[in-house]
Picture: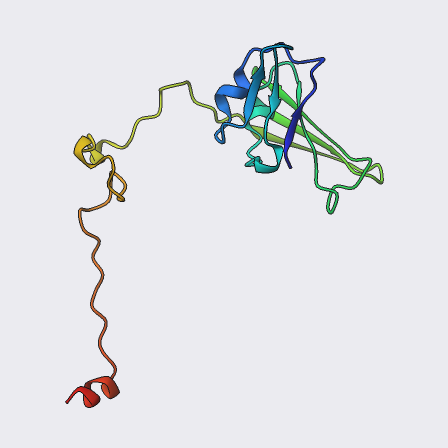
Length: 151
């Protein structure tokens, strides 16, 4: 469900731009408001919705499972450290969900000590920093009919 911005609520703080993992949220210098530049490419992580303190971000549901007349709203309560979701279905039914906020302070995430410092000479390597230099792939036994044909 891609996100969109209510420009009347947006104050241009840039929190949604900073947190978007797909780098899709942009800042319009003329209106001084944020907007989703490519909603069709949205990862649907909803980080921007959860981070917005002005409730300027909202979710546009897909018509196949969220038909016209729906509503999705989010309330971030930092005192209780929870995010509350309220979903209003087309038939009027309402469901509410609460999830803990698991956001960590910027720069606070550290890799496990066992990984150590990655080797900077391997930055363009296809392996992750915790992977071995060479992946072990055991040699599979050849079928008997292949061996018989080779003899």
